[in-house]
Image 1: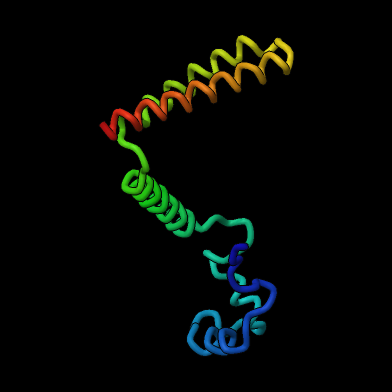
Image 2: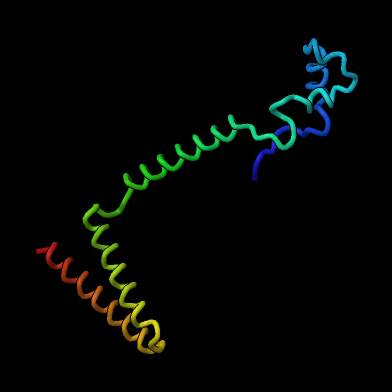
Length: 130
């Protein structure tokens, strides 16, 4: 959902009376709605670069804060994350080679990998307990 700003078809009552009363050079115009719509920054088809810059700055700030929060709350250390990413890349390379095999072979390989992971977890837990 986004905010498109004030309607340009007609000015709100409080805005129209304020615009007509305060603008000296524009007071000669008869229609206050056309006075409101004729402001250079609010005309149709024109880009308001200040709003674009503000949006870009907010987006950049959000990305920076999000990345910082992700780094601070990461469940693993950097070395563990790199190892996990390397293992995932190797697994994807292997699965790319086996892509043409049938589903039963892929299932068998997945079960073997799960069994290997479980065995490694148990071994690491025993090493930590010892």
